[in-house]
Image (cartoon, rainbow, N blue to C red; front, side, top):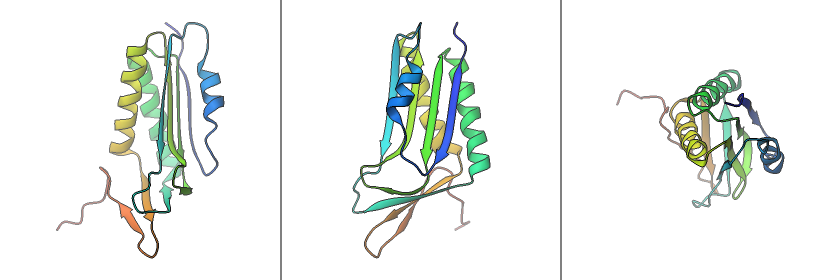
Length: 144
């Protein structure tokens, strides 16, 4: 079994996808899975993303490490953008490398679902004069 290399980040800059793929490509790897979540055009011009950075980074690392170990993958990178991200821009990038594709696909999907379920990152769709927060799984309850 290969040792897990894990990279997580929250940043305003573009995500260096090619660099992440190059880092993942190493001896013993038989499959690399890339998830590139982009800002889609849902009648918006951009998305503004905010994070509770310290907590979000710790949670991203916990998720990436625990799922990576569970699936015996060799590399996991999870990079989430913050700030203003235009339509078509990379919002969340996950790269997983493993000896076998099944492990890489399963780990990538579980990492994505765990991020959506519990990492304190909030998104606001920016439309002409009609900005709206996107409700997620961890949206605060109003008691209504």
